[in-house]
Each structure stands twice: as structure tokens, then as C-alpha cells.
Length: 117
Image 1 (cartoon, one colour):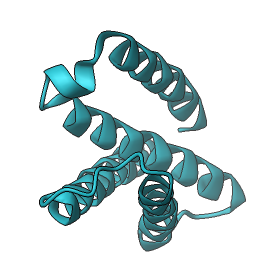
Image 2 (cartoon, one colour; image 1 turned 180 degrees about the horizontal axis):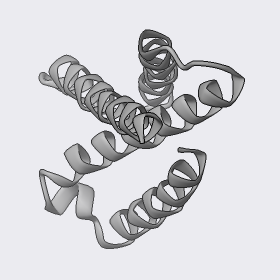
Image 3 (cartoon, one colour; image 1 turned 30 degrees about the vertical axis):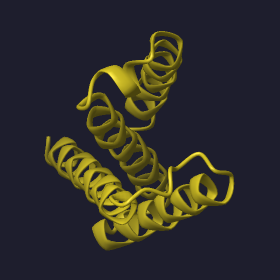
């Protein structure tokens, strides 16, 4: 899982760089959804991989760790003015967290299936 997380981190960074260069976040409404889901999968994979090396990973622990990091990121965006203080900001933040948790859940499913093999 750690190798998957590493490769997907590189992919996530490249996709983010391309998005900023070509204004994908503003041109394509769905791009932000893709990135938050992928970030959740990357974070979940990395956490699952580390926990599996330390013993049996706990899915609730993976999700809790992801929520702490994702919540900190959303606070960082708000404090630094990256997030826009518009009418739908709270709903957008909730959507970002749900997408990230969904990606982390998928990472746990993949990790559990890989352990069974």
C-alpha cells in the first residue's frame, strides 16, 4: 500500500500542477471532486500502509487520521484565504471531506483485499 500511495502522490502532484497551470479547477466543475477523492485515497493508502507495517491496521483509525489531516487542510485554506467565503462554502467544505473520506474508505477496502490474497 505504501508503494501505491507513493505513486499516487506523484500523480496527484502532477494533476494539481497541471490544474493550476491550465485553470482546470475553474474550468471544470468536476476536477475538484476528482482531486479530493484521489487525495483521500492517497492519504488512506499511506495511513493503511504504515499501520499494516506496525501491526493489523484499524479502519476506524485510518479514517480518523484522514479526517484530522483533511480538517486541518480545510482550516488552512480558510485562514489563508484559499477558500472563498461564499454562500456555498460550508457545503463545499463538507463535500470535500465526504469525498476524501470516500477515497480513504476505498483505500481501506483495497488494503483489506490485498491482505486476504
